[in-house]
Length: 177
Image 1: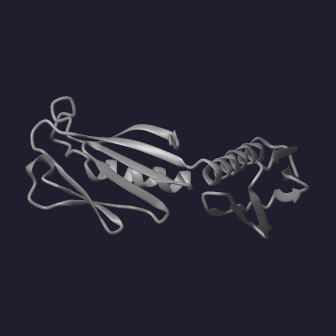
Image 2: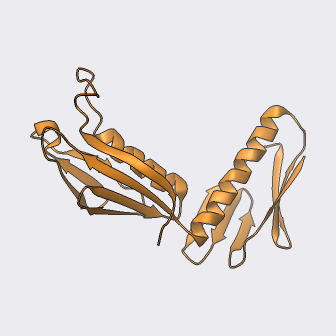
C-alpha cells in the first residue's frame, strides 16, 4: 500500500529517521512517526507513506499518519483556534492566565482556586466570557482546551442540568483572522 501527500507551497519538510520536522510561515512542528512495517520518505514535493504489508491494522496506522501530517501542514500555514465559553449560574468565576496556567477562582463558591496547564506553543486569551486558544500544533491546542474543561468538572453529587457552571469548548478548528 502506498499513500502520497503533496507538500503545500511555502512549507519545508525535513525527515530524519523517525522524526519529521515541518516548517511554515507560522512556525515549526516536529513529531516522531515509528512503526516497523511503515516507511516515510520525501520525493520531489511529496511525502510518500509505504507499508510492507496490507493488513487492517497497518492500513489504519497509515491513515492516521496521513491525517497527522495534514494537520501539521494546516497548522504551520493557517494555525488552529479553539473557542471556549465561561458559563456560571450560581457564583461568578474569575478566570485569568498566570504564566503557563489558567487560574479559575470562585468556581461554585470554592475558596481554593483551580488550575489548568497551558502547553508550550499555545496562546490563551481571555476576553469577557470567551476563552480563545491559538497555536500551530492541533494536539497541544486541543489538550490545553481539555485541561481547562477538566479543571471545571463538577463533583459527582451535582446534577449537570442544574449546575451548568464551567468552561466549555464551543468551537474548534482553523484560525479566523
